[in-house]
Length: 45
Length: 369
Image (cartoon, rainbow over all chains, first blue to last red; front, side):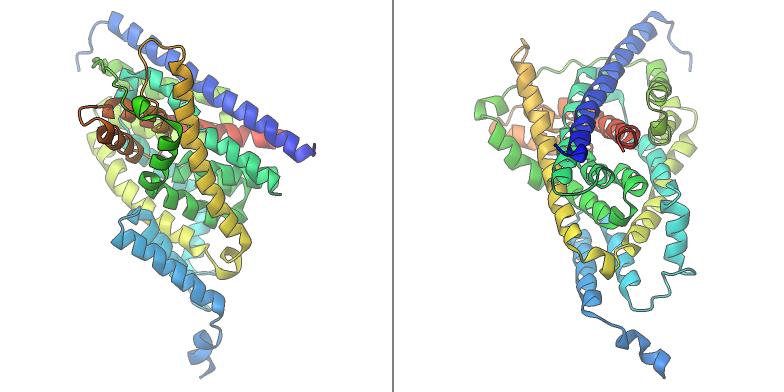
């Protein structure tokens, strides 16, 4: 396998895994923000 | 006398072909309403640049000055992100954060297309620039292509914007090929939840910090988008928010389009590369759609409350077109099926996903060179 194809496969795998990881992280952060916000007193403004 | 006929004498076949392409873009923009805000300026920019001895380009040409100031420096795409950020309402996504998964799955086309491009002989940087067409996000495509393969910027931009406008034509056949009628008729319950204002405000800040720390090279992309969104969400900067959504968006779009058009010079554009890139862009959009749909079907194997797999296809960045296409298709199968909210959430997730994918490409590709 040529080095470029090997590199492309790695970028593909890591890239896709990276997008999933980051968005899963965003998912938990969003849930966490909502949970925390619901425990805080409502904003006056 | 020579100066008077210089334009005519220097006309070549390539100029006429480019005039034809420019006129097609203008026609599509005006008659077919395909991304008119971009395709019309791109078409007219191409006309200006392909007139022999055009004073619009060259060292003192205003289009070259705009290119050097706005594209080469990446200023225009970043400013567009501020404007787009001010236009995005992340609330549908916060109400349905689960849809973030589809914003990730529907980026599959970027990486699949990158791999196909490498197989076709492009180097890794060029392949990444071609693959990013699958982000279905013009500014991200321009930003990445400008960093990695400036010579391919014009065809990549044209492909990105053209296919974004063709989402209603590209997605339905792919979705139908991958789903059964029964799957397309799946109904989804929607739970409306109130999102506290503090979450709307904290969201862009937290996302910027997390994404920026994980991939510092993505700060310009994510940060400008989230800055625009914070202006919108904070509730105290209505004038700035309106300015970003209207004046800034309109002005930068105008300059971005005509400047991109000016890079469509006959000698650079009329090459086999252009046709290949246009074809690869289509491949990327098809793989994006397939990635989202197949991921939803995979999740359905484990979920009690099934997801309509068409919602997965809305995980691309073309907002709100993709969500509307999915809702229309759902209605065709079952007139009482309403999945617009879920599709919109997935579509907003796609906007985040495309930027994250762009940032990851910027970080990963140099590491493998």
